[in-house]
Length: 291
Ligand SMILES: Nc1ncnc2c1ncn2[C@@H]1O[C@H](COP(=O)(O)OP(=O)(O)OP(=O)(O)O)[C@@H](O)[C@H]1O
Image 1 (cartoon, rainbow, N blue to C red):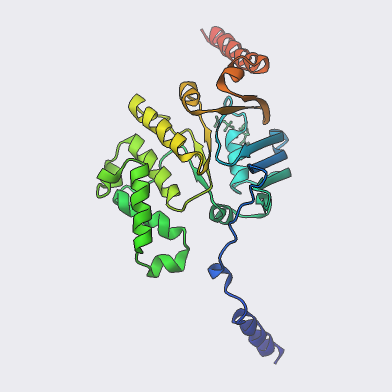
Image 2 (image 1 turned 90 degrees about the horizontal axis):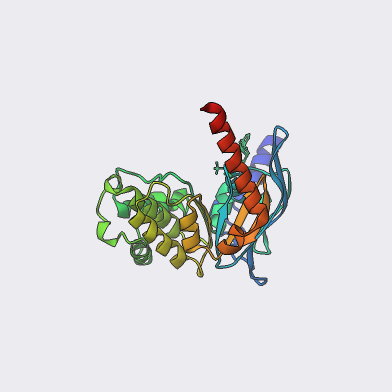
């Protein structure tokens, strides 16, 4: 008897007229940037089996900024991106999106819905689909399972895809299969797949690796054009590219911020010089030992 009562109670709760099902409830995505900062990373620590991948890391990114994150292999760049996007949990510290969204108590999907888009180094477009279809799929999956199944594109959505095609320079290739695009074009398409859902913060991992000089130049233009309206964090090893786009560069070393400033300031920073020269001389030594 009490089982039936419980079932009735739970059905009543599910269909309460004053609430909507969680998967239909709109997410409050308003981001409070009154203090001009959109991302606060404070005293973040993360160890893997005793190894400190992130070590009392502090980082503040202003709304609309294009920030480049550099650092040697193993400095903690990817781990930091993983923590911001909810892929990995840190041991301590705090990460806020604006003043109002604590990212550490949210999952990956919720963080993406808040407006944080991430692009990994390797493009993962649907090669058998056209450029347009790739963008359409991203637009719909962003809206959840139910709308994806039943919806057709509205004129606003078609306009949105057209805007994105123009931004990423692929308007003339909309009916081409994504698999037929060049490596650079695939990277731009994937950036476009993030843009259709109108993110506030984009995290982009090594965008120009493997690109031709011309594609690299076009990517620099694309990323600088996105900043302002959006905030863009780029992880990159190509220093010439970083110099061409960055106003502020952050150098990570052993899970902490080693230096921050313009590219000129970074290149003349004594700590940075010592770390990089130290690594170069270590490489020279090991090459000498191997020869
Ligand atoms: N899941 C994990 N388990 C154990 N160690 C890890 C794990 N993820 C990262 N690490 C270690 O944490 C350190 C930081 O790695 P991370 O990938 O963040 O560096 P990175 O700056 O992105 O380097 P790269 O430029 O090579 O991509 C490295 O020493 C790495 O081996």
